[in-house]
Each structure stands twice: as C-alpha cells, then as structure tokens.
Image 1: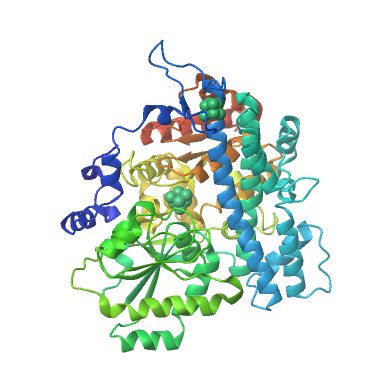
Image 2: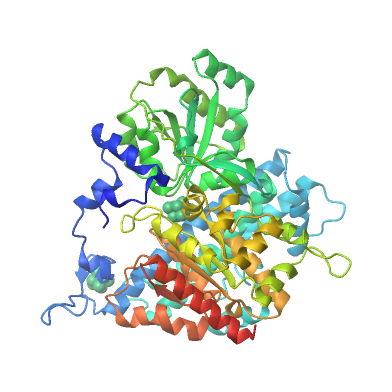
Length: 630
Ligand code: SF4
Ligand code: SF4
C-alpha cells in the first residue's frame, strides 16, 4: 500500500485535488485502502473459501498446527484455483455481457432503421460469418449479424465463430487441450458449476475450465463488443484528443460519462449537441455543455469522437471533488460505490442508468436502448438544470495534454500503407511492420493494459514501463486505464518520439504515429488479438512465436484476470505488476507462471518493479527473435 504522498508527480492531477478532498473532508480510495491495513493474509494468498455454508474455511500455511484442508477436504490447490477461476469467469461475464448489449443495440438499430456507421465493416463481418450479403439492405444485414452474434452466447453446438481468426497452430493447441470456446454463457457457467462444493478438485482441470471461459471473452464477448461497436458507431481513425482532469471547464455544464458501454455515451454525444439543450444551458448561465469521458467509456468516445479523456480509475472521485461536475453519468463496471457520498458533498448528481448497476444514494434514470436519444436528452437536461446549484468551492486542475489516438487495427494497417511501395507490394497488409521487426529496427511489440491499484502509485508503473520499452525500440500498444495513464504522461504526443530508441523513433516519424498507440477500451484488447492473429498468419507462425508481450502493471479487476488468462492461452507472455491471490498454492502459482508455457506458449510473470518488468519483456522478446532467427 502506497501512502497518498507517493503519487507519480503532478501529471496525474491527483495531488492538488487530493489536498482539496482532505480540506473538504472527503474520504477517497486511498483513505479506505489505508483503513483496510493490514489486509487479510488468507485472502491475499487465495486460501480462504466461502463456497458453502460449512465454511468459511482457510488454509493456515504459517503454523504447522493450522488446518491444511477445508471442512470438505479441499486443499489449498483446490481452493486457490477455484477462487482464481471464479474471478476469471466473472471478468469474462462482465466483458461478454457488454458484448451482448452491443449486439442487442445493433439489433434495435436495424429494427428502427437507425444509422449504421461502418457499412463496410458490417459487410466484411457478414461475409466472414458466412452470411449472404448480395442484394441485402444494410438493416437486413445488421439484423442478421446481430442475431448471429447473440447466438454466440448460448448456441448448443460447435465453437465460437471468431476462433477462426486465430492461426491454425493456435487452434490446434486449443483443440488438444479441449479449451476451444464453445458458447460464451456456457463456458462461464461451467466454471461456476465445476467450482461448486464437491465438484472439480483438480487445480489443473479447474484452470483449464477458466481458460475456456477466458477465451470465450477475448475471442468471443470482447471481440463481439469491439466489432459490433465499430459497425454501429464507427471504426476509430487517428485524431487528436485532450486528456486529464484539466479538460473540465469552469464556465460550462460539465457531464462526465463513466463506465463501459458505448451505447449510453454515444447517445450522450448526440444529446449534448442538441441546440435546444445547448440553449437551455446558456439560459442557466453556462457557456455550453462539456461532455468528457472517464475509464473505458472515456476511451470509447475519445476513440470515435475525440471527446476529452477526463481520467482513469483513480481519478473518478477526484473529478467530483473539482466541484464543477454537474452530472456523472454511469452505466456498468469500475464505478466506485463511494461516488454518491462524494457527490453529496458537492452539487454533483451521480446518475446511474443500468438495471445491472444501481448504487444507493444515486439518481437512477434507466437508459433504454430502444429509446436511447430521448433517454440521453433527459439525462443531459438534468445536468443542465443542476448548473445553478454549483458553489464557489471549485478547483479545476491545470493538467491537460493533447495526444493522438484512434489506432484500430484498420488505422494501423492504413498507416502502414503510407510507407508501402505499392509498385512492388500489396497494400492493406502488415508487411512494413513485419519488415521493421525482422530487420531489428523494431525489436517487438508490447501491450500495456489494465487498471489502477492502491498497491502502486497511480499511473506510475504504466508510465515507467512504457518509457523503458519505447527507449529500447519496442512499440507499445495500450488500452483501458493504461491508455489514460500514457496519454497523460505525454506518450501519445509528437514529443514522445524523443523518448524512443533510434529505431522506433524512425518508424514513428515515417508512419506519423506516436510510439504508444491507443487501441481503445478494455474490450478492445480483442483488437490486439486480431492484430497478432493477422501478423501470425502473415508470417506463417503461431502467436506464441512472435516477439511480443503484454503487461498489466496496475491491474485490479476480475476482468483483468480474464484478459490475462486469455492472453496467456493465446500464447502471450503476460507480466502482472500486482500479485494475484494465488500464492497460497505453490502448485497453482507454478502452473500459471511456468507450466502453462509448455502447454499454451504463454505464461504469467509477476513483477512489481516496472523497470524490471520492462527488462523481462525485453529479454522475452529477444528470446523470441532468436527462435525466429531474426
Ligand atoms: S467448499 Fe469446502 S473449503 Fe469451501 S467453504 Fe465449503 S467446506 Fe469449506
Ligand atoms: S482498465 Fe481496469 S479500472 Fe480501467 S476501466 Fe478497465 S477494468 Fe476498469
């Protein structure tokens, strides 16, 4: 646990607001983390079980006399692996339910003949899924694609359609381990079933079920979420965006949209541009309406519309502490239940919108996808009418930076086309990137993803890790709260090229891209899988053979565990900066951090020091380069 004075410098905009929070007697995440010390050792090691009412049981490792089995006879291996698997299932469920909502949104959009932004992508996906496209209207196609996507959650036979995107060798590994994801809900349910009391007691088999559920997320729920969001709301293209809490405006009605699903935020984007609502804001004495985004919803609207990125997970309470937020509008996931208490001390309205996520003390205005624009208008009006209640107790931090974002797979390939010699080579391929890696100008690619966690100074590990990697000619791709951390630290600006090794700097200048590419929200990690699959197929190797790695230096959520697990099972070396709750089982720890490599070609590594983590990634990349003989 870090005390609150050890934040990474001022670029986070945290210290000034934390001081204000203290003055205003607001309790924040760091206060609660401090009050929680020392945290329970049994929980930290993953050897506490509450799966039945004979428990709770715990395995006592430190004293020879303590219980070594649960009352049912479950060992530390069984208990720790069941806990881990249930977390993975919960993470997969969160992403996948998000994907399902987007599929439903596409269905309603088709039904109501609402605009479908990326028809080209819709047609391409329909063809990929074997849907007849010729002579079909956009609405008809969207409806068919939505139906097929919704089927992925509970189809009785076969496997997920996006599995076909994986390279052949990867599919064979999954087949041999019987982890090929079948139907998303089924794979998640199976983990919950097999980890019930008196069911699966074999830690390896439990992790195998967790792997299947995680693959159902990465190559299923998340990929559906990303692809269908692009179809519905547009595939991101590169553009500039402002970031950090300095994007809040003193003279405007500020609305922070926070959570995950782009359906709500997209409707808000439309509503804040409604001339009647802008006029209403002016009538209330404001200059206009300022919509900004937080966490993954922030990433979604920044990627597609250039809506400013207000901040990441640990800035949500502090955004309210500024005193200038008229409404924080939330949907699902990563929304601190403390927010209504913080909001109560100011004039801010915390507005919940999903029936899946109500918070006592919040105003609930249910968002109905069938009636999205009207719902969004009502929410915006609520914020506008709240402007007059603002007090003088305000502090808008000065911290604000500009970065270039919008790197979908399509944008990356388009950027690569910019340096393709079309007389000699085909455009629309990853050849220039592969050539740069083969020549050694670029050593490899690393993904930095995940959250904030009180065990790490906010954003510090994301930033130090990214800087060390780009200094050593490794291109970084990022999503989620890691992306927020990187843009705030200036790593998506033109100047960031100065921090790169010579090889990466040259590539960035040629391609006109920053060395840290923002690829979107947490579900958009499926874009990274897609890119790796394309590169693998182009090089005729498996994903595990590529000089790539991933890191979640400040992870905290179950979704991050699902992401880590599907990445490992996809053949990727994944460095975790925060130790998962597994260490009470030596067998499980060894399985996840070593044995899995022999099976899947990927494994977890636990390393809390970001510089050491960077060097472990660099070493891994060099090993892969050697094996590829490049
Ligand atoms: S499932 Fe077994 S270990 Fe878990 S609480 Fe019940 S008796 Fe205890
Ligand atoms: S990166 Fe983590 S904290 Fe941030 S939105 Fe995603 S899951 Fe939540």
